[in-house]
Length: 295
Image (cartoon, rainbow, N blue to C red; front, side, top):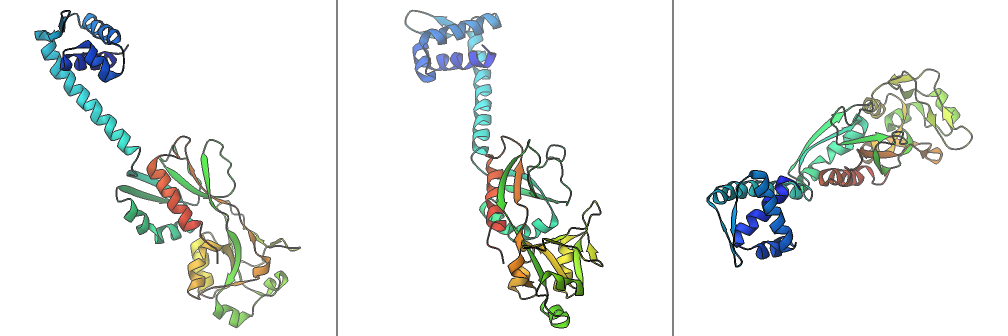
């Protein structure tokens, strides 16, 4: 039995001047309380309680020890209350890692999260490279693609659509493609991954992939969208990346009948952390923002 397991029986007995009263408070037998106090006295090498057949009383040493023990128990109770409260309330520092493309809609709706949970301190870290949650001290990582790390717990936020888009002024100038083969006559804005590989465009039907012979390459998804909105050419991106541009009429979808699903978007955390209130709160918020309707 640990020291602290003996201290509380002593304190409750001293407060009630009774082993039976202490036992009733602690939910154990009077014998168990008596043995715990006796073990504490043996460990300290002093008598803390005077015992008679009718009641117990504190020795001078017991009075001194009781004052210190009460302070210790009060601190322990305060710590337990704090931890229990933290386990029920979304609060504290929360570091989230995501790509800039995913971050734009999150940032646009961030005030909604902060209004609901004013005690959360959000740190958004943007990177197109998957980071180690442990090494980078990340609470949540939002990633696009199938889960390939079995050590992480994932919650699916949405499955986006690949949409092919261009600005109305570009289409008025260059004409609207009616089939995949028509793209050969257009300026194609394509994404170059960090590896240098150029992402192919994906379509339904016989022409499942397409890569322009002379693409304009971007290694930043948001700037690629900006270029499409500025009338530079045609782009293929995830639907959530251009939702607001479409609503404002800056971009329109072309070849919509050939659109296909993209890879899923997940919120990832370390095992056992998915029920932490601040992590659950942010994940629910991300579902609202990213899991909404497409174009």
